[in-house]
View 1 (cartoon, one colour):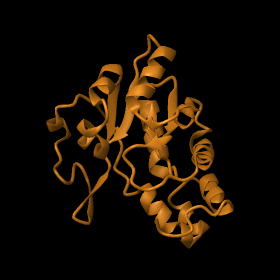
View 2 (cartoon, rainbow, N blue to C red):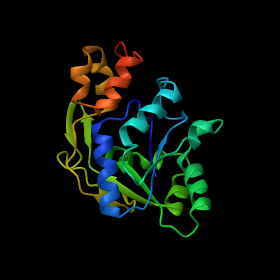
View 3 (tube, helix red, strand yellow):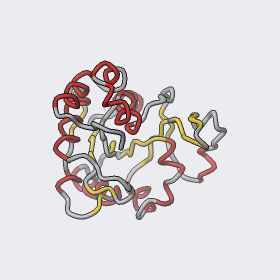
View 4 (cartoon, one colour):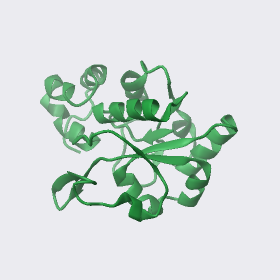
Length: 200
């Protein structure tokens, strides 16, 4: 499972999906745009746009399935519920939850995080963290992810200094700027539908 707002999906998301598929030898990777994000203070873009952009960003990867279950679910989206549904779908499979180092560092604040650990293994990639306005990777900051006491498997990919926030901030700069941050088809979609016209 690889969940997130995907508002929008960018090149680091794409690389993380490819890395997880290859390193974990995944038969299938459910890319799941969140429905109602309980932890987000801003309003997400319409679910139909985020779903369409995920199709464009990941749809050509044979192992990827774009999964709209959280969008269809009423109420807030909780990973524990999604993993419970996937466990019923794949009763004998080893389930992984793919996430970034920033999410691991805040993992104990997740709703029913203990249930998440019971239902799947965490697969964690380093990613840049913003501390006092300085963006560095968890490794550069000396963040000892093992010190969290949460078991996980490390995904081996270089941290990309890229975020959905940065993409939204640069969207008004036009297609050329976006094309360096998101897959080409996603860039075209953002321009076509005039998403992110101003800084959020």
